[in-house]
Length: 352
Length: 177
Image 1 (cartoon, rainbow over the protein chains, first blue to last red):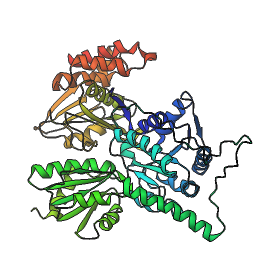
Image 2: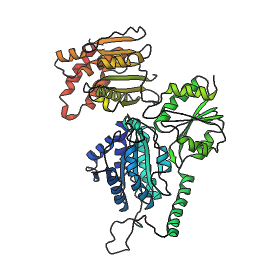
Image 3: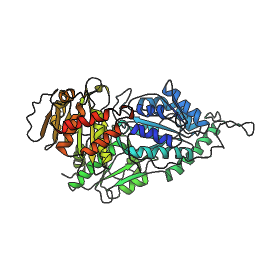
Image 4: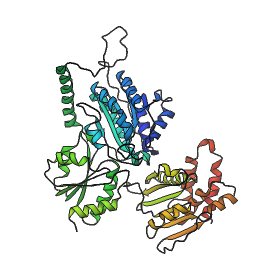
């Protein structure tokens, strides 16, 4: 397969077009802007719509509108912009609409900075808006995975009628790596039972709505959605287990941080320390089964994140606090290097 | 081949990101694993711009280079900022038209090339970055001249095809100085 050299942001855009995304609505923000720029150049030629909205809020509501008609729609932003989109994302979830949202994270809170961060983990997995709902959250660690996960996100969003997020970061968005585009057959899902795409006087109106004024009706709609979430938790988790079979210390990291951690794990092994890596590829649903499998022989776990420690909560829950879970992180846009992680492995692993 | 980690740094506008892209494309053509990571942000306007390039036979871990095997420096602030980070045994290439070295390290090899002057004398304005790349492939053997020429043909857009010959010339000047 031909290898191309592309920035992560551009690869996300190209993959979305190949996956049959017909509507992209966005608003510029560093470090995600190349994605929108690529869409501006390519989308029209690909027979779709690119529209730079007047704000993030407008963009996400355009996604809601487009998704209501059954077309594949997407928006992208970076951390502060995703916060602005959160109301619309809740409406999309409450309306049972498929859509793909991309967050190329930067440091926060507030305007924060523009360098890479993973401090939106809680937001993405716990509370991207008000109300009882979840998104599918995918965490790529390479430009190739960005491509593969965008395609998957569109398919799964359609399958479960829910929003899906790619939680990337500024490092993955800005870097170039070899990438190949697999033969993508845009997986057409039959949306004729709900899409509000014109009834031509031949069928009942389809109404897309998230308003239920009667509590028992709202409770039922939420409960139906949560029954779907249970099915997703059982079948849609994904993780990479690296050198975990015999590990004494299990490092846990996702996204760009996992690349740095892998280098540190390799160096630790070269020095005789039995380190392993658990890398969740889905953050919601969190791969609990896979983590317990990876942690079988470990005496300690060490979560490494570009934040003050957010995924560590899910790790403790997944193993039911049965083993000590330590934390090492850098935040604000600082990228940890393999040497400092190795030092941390030695410190908490008691290898000295 | 173990990973070769490279930092290219200079003023925004000198073509450090483009030179890094050429090295990355050479890796692509040679079927290597590689990564290219630019600095991004306000420092690019007038200050220093830099990029990290990793070339390897193994998958790349962190794409951010902190201790380079090869440093290509195109202005004084970049030279001063990175010279002490170069790995022992590493190689440094710098534009001696713009940079004065007061480096006393003896554990690295330092190559001074008046690349801006050479480019200007040969009517290759703005070709200083490519002159330096010519010197890099000659002294490190990381890529062949043939690979780099193929790569130039690939990365120079068709609308600027007349610049291909100039880039070839710049590489050769770098290799012969």
